[in-house]
Length: 145
Image (cartoon, rainbow, N blue to C red):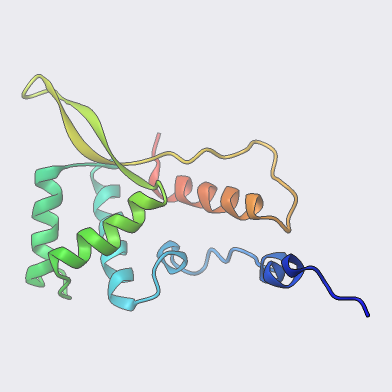
């Protein structure tokens, strides 16, 4: 009797998986509604600041989330551990040195990272295809050139 190899059953969902851009980007990273709202607020704030936030600006943003000024409350600890940690673990946001012209020195700032995207799309039923599409989606949302 034929028994399918273990990888055929484990990767079956990837074969028919399509990226639905009608859903928010954060739906792929976060399962909880409050985490999604905080992540969406962070993405909107980063977009308004051209993809860069200093540590002080990030701290001010987190304080507004913790105080509930944005219509919902989200604690500082949860934000730094869950939301910012997830974005940095996946390589979407990183702490990078940037030049601060008023102070005339370089400082560390949180920046949206441009994801590497292949010019030629990989074949569909593969992890590489999904990673490429998610990276392309992130670049479309966050990177303004």
